[in-house]
Amino acid sequence: MERIAHRGAKREFPENTLAAFARAYERGADAVELDVHCTRDGVVVVHHDAAIPVRLPMFAERNIADLDWSVVSTIDLGGGATIPTLSEVLDSAPASATVYVEVKGAGIEEQVADVVRRHHTRCALHSFDHAAIGRLAVLAPDLPRGILLEHAVRDVVTAMRAVDARDLWPKWRLIDRKLVELVHGAGGRVIAWTVNDREDAEQLIAMGVDGLCTDDVRLLDGL
Image (cartoon, rainbow, N blue to C red; front, top):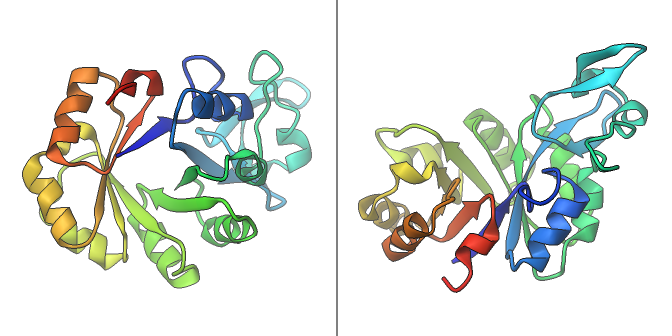
C-alpha cells in the first residue's frame, strides 16, 4: 500500500513546493501527488490553482496560462517558497519515489507528457478531466494514467476502460470492498483521496486499496 503525500507535506510547508515534497519524503512518503498548469511560454509548473496573485504593477489575480515563466517564477508563496517547475520536482524526487501528476490546466497534455518522458522518475498521470486522460492514452500510451472521481458513477470499470486508465482515484467515502474488488478484477488499482483520519485509513487498508493520499503522511506511520 502506497503512502502518497497530497501536495507534499502541506501542513509543514507551502503546498506543491520543493520544500513540501522534500519533507514528505523525509516523513516516509512513498510518493507525492501534485497539480500542474502550463505558462504562456510552455513551461509546466506545479501549483493547485489556475490563477495566482501578481504585481503588474498592482496586485491582481492572473491565470498562469496567461503569464510567462519569468513572471510566475518570481511569485513568493511565503517564506521565500516559489512555484517550481514539474521538471525541478522530478529532478528532486528520490529514485524509489513515484510522482503522481494531476493534469489541471486545459489542453496541456502534450507538454506534461514531454516533461515526464525527459526524466527517469517513476510517474503516473491523472485528472478529473477524463477526456484529457483519453487524449494522453493516444499521446503517451506508455505512461500510466488514472481518473479522479468525486461522485459515484454507475460503472467504474467502463469509465476506466473508456480512457485506458490503470488507476481509479475515488474520494475515500466512495470506496467499499465491492468497488476495490471490481477494479482489481479488471486489472486496475484504487487510490483513495484525501484520507486524514487514521481509523478511516485502517478501514480502507482492510478493504484492499492500493494507495492512500493524505495531507500528512505521519498519520500513516505503522500502518
